[in-house]
Image (tube, rainbow, N blue to C red):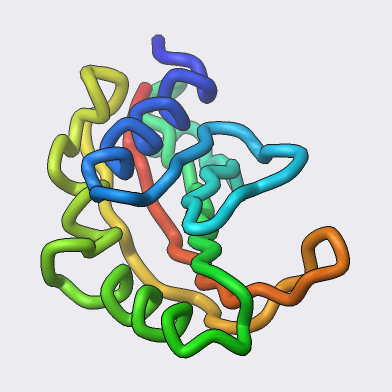
Length: 134
């Protein structure tokens, strides 16, 4: 059975295929945009028979830059789209996450807005990723 850390690392590894995007499988002390941060949101147990499949729901927060910069919005647009820098395409590139899961899907983009980090305001977006593993 894969650990939650292994699954987070698999998501981060898939995201690392996007040129120029830093990734973190754990919440960093001092994130340096552009960065994608993977965090566990919820776990749903016993999806198939007793002690069977488990649904893990992760949030991937993509922080692109200071919110006042035109570049930040354009960069975020690229990560949201289904083009070359697509978060969805990168995560779903290897749906087994390096052999730690049966399947993974980016199911939604939940929010776009400003976040405060170290006295600076950055533009960010939260993507929901559902992983099925046992």
